[in-house]
Image (cartoon, rainbow, N blue to C red; front, top):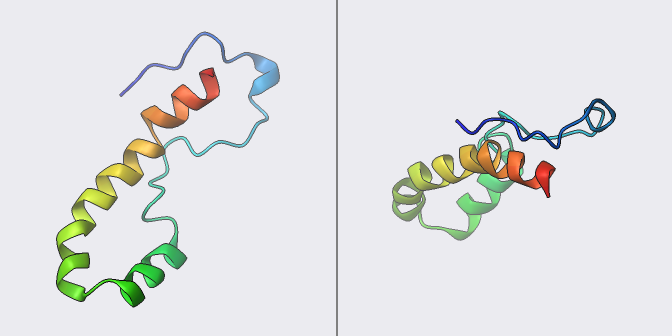
Length: 68
């Protein structure tokens, strides 16, 4: 995991963030949309990658976004 940057101060802690969320699994609408547009076999093949990317977006990328 990535350490929290020093830039996070007390006055920035009230900003909602997605730290710790898997942005793929917490969006059921995205899953339903993918089920409409992708063949089941392709979605099954891509699901592990989407889960890893969703975790990364709610983890290290969220930390970097707050530091920007």
